[in-house]
Image (cartoon, rainbow, N blue to C red):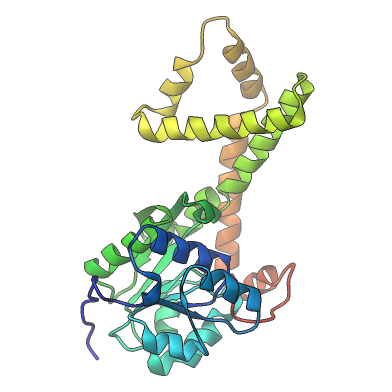
Length: 296
């Protein structure tokens, strides 16, 4: 069947996989008013606690993944990367071109997703973990048969949990190194800032609160002020003052270079895992073993 436009005012959304990322997206979609919960569904295959989380949002719980697909116009595959192939192949008879398919499975390329589904109306999205608090940095890439309208619809869905950009899929390894792995770098920086505060005499709770809020405030300034980060840094750096003394120490320790190297190293590792399926599967299976298709 030929692709038909998704009716934005009446479409149904389904999640194949009911893990925490799917929950975050569903919550954002409901709370932002993009969709009422009655038009969202998922299936719980093993963990009843996941069902409780979705029911609290008013989302419909259906018996099987096949029921979710049949009930949905837009289907988001939010399963673990090592099982997405089997899941898509099992559901392939139901995945007509009338349905817009979306994958958030890390490292799984569009060419494979399209081959397994039997058509190219697929969009790959890479969100990151701050989607849990509505501050995701997501990137999407459109498959061969996905339309501009499809892209706009997906942007609206994922825009409910943060910001979303569009990029060529060939950039996804670099995106993994920056926004995918980036939250961990920032958590490390927050921890280090707090430790510095403790070393300088602050109580731990106060130091951690100040460090976290300082990072949040600085990020907000970088986004909202329209100024280059270098200019913002200069604005707070007085001649012979405390800030330039601290920056001097960071520069002596190669702070910028370390962050740049972290992004490049993570990007290279993402490329290695994407291009070597055996290594990727082994890596993704750690530290947990495969139990079901419901979590991500």
